[in-house]
Length: 149
Length: 69
Image (cartoon, rainbow over all chains, first blue to last red; front, side):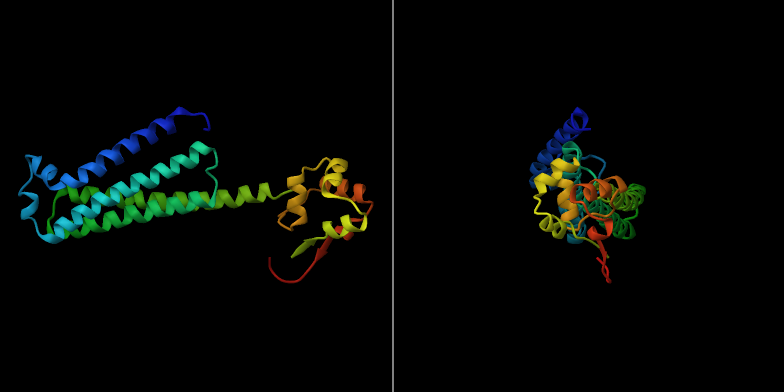
């Protein structure tokens, strides 16, 4: 994996998305309004909806940031570290928080899209948690081998 | 827990870590793991080569002490 160009390319894409996403953060209401199929403009939504929208946006940027750092560990060729387990757990928490916010939004404004996003985020969050546990076991096995003289 | 008394035996034989590494063929990193009691397991072949180099018994190197690591 050390000389694999795929993680480098994916990381470049993530950085690009984070960069564009970061800039877009300042124009979020305008971007929101630019979609023709929305029910009402961003400013007309309740303050809680606006906060939740910004929070979800920031969470996604955070997820991309953590994903980038995971790829960095893979690029270095040292994925079986405590750091990786920790990052996977953070990913899991971020996805579960995202799912919770979208579910709360779904309770007040029920749409099929919200339900789908919440469901997918929940499953992905759980998957990352399972993956972190797999890595935890793998790291303990690696330690066992590394410290066998 | 099992304690590796490698440093004690090395001091008794007046042997440095480098010298032991050369005699046994065990890397300095691995000898350091043993010396600092960080090893989780030790192969018989490793134990044999250390015993041969230090002219001692495995019991001189390993010691059991009560309590968890």
